[in-house]
Image 1: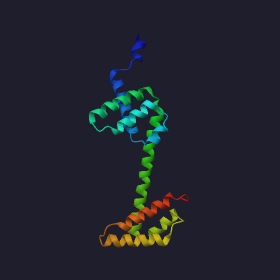
Image 2: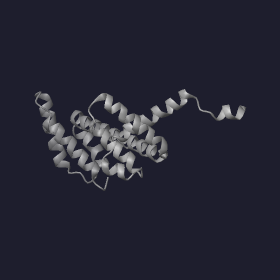
Image 3: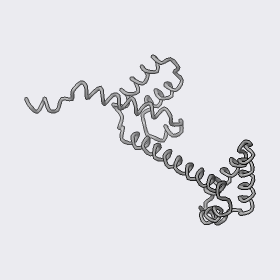
Image 4: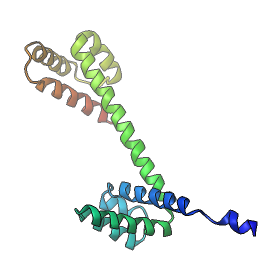
Length: 167
């Protein structure tokens, strides 16, 4: 008799589990159709996710998320959870890289040629003259309080350098 009570899951725990599955479903809504197709889920779940994207009414969307949670209960959620976690990790690493490039750009604008050596150490294939020109223009814009067009161009140039295969 005691074994039956230990195996029984409380109603509160079932609700918490369903809420976690609904949260997983809402995170899956952010995936593209191609990414969802690659996740090996049932066609019913895939159709429910596609339908949920088009629902604008809050109450209808809430009902659809309930349905998605029930469908996820029948699926193997581990690969889906891993895919969501991988997406979050990828997003975090992109954000870190973006901030590093912003800091590098700001350092270039602040310090000029002395910081250019650091950039060339990171990106030996970079065009020194082009970067110096962009840095001069960005400094000039900053001093004259003009819109930061050259600063954006400098950031774009650094991002292109980072995306090149030699990096």
